Image 1: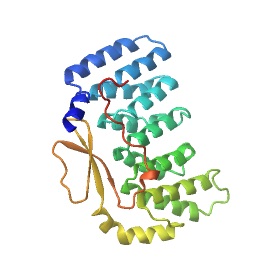
Image 2 (image 1 turned 90 degrees about the vertical axis):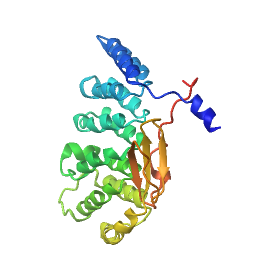
Image 3 (image 1 turned 30 degrees about the vertical axis):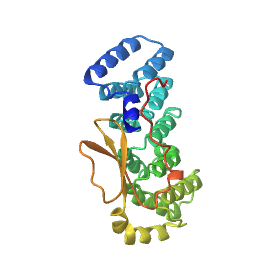
Length: 267
């Protein structure tokens, strides 16, 4: 059965495949309409090669909003570190684009690579900036789905600001921010505290022992498949870390399952 599954799986694109797909992608996009550029993206992403995925990522930086949205959606279905890098790099340049930033965050969550958490954690610390605060509920929701332990401290800090801000004029979305932060912390940790004064001492006391019990997911360069490992298992050779999660992480609140490798004959 394993041999059959391997034979049915599409081969990993070679550098030659990537170069050919990239050349066709650029040709298809040259002077094309918005609609045709979207079609070109959907075709190009079938070749999950670093060069192609990076080129699609660039579309999120210099194209019309519908093209950017299509590029984000395409990368959200391409399980590759280049997809995660491109989506992460596109967050700040699109922070004010109301149609684009939700598509990028959704793709980041669907992909599930925790490499994006650092950039999103930085946004949480900028809650005082109006442009950031407007999209922060969606950012925090995404962090909950990624499940990175690195997000716990920023989320607790956010709760502290929301609970002890002492502002005469509260931010319009404070209630939503607080609910999303609490939900994200519950998803990442499996705990159900209600206030930052409860979250903070629990995390300070338990984080070291919990980090030793984290499960990990790796992406294999040779096959572009994922493998889930227990805390005691050794990382595979020639692999990239996708995610590390605490034992209490709630998969029901997490990102959808990682994009599956396409099988021969599938569209």
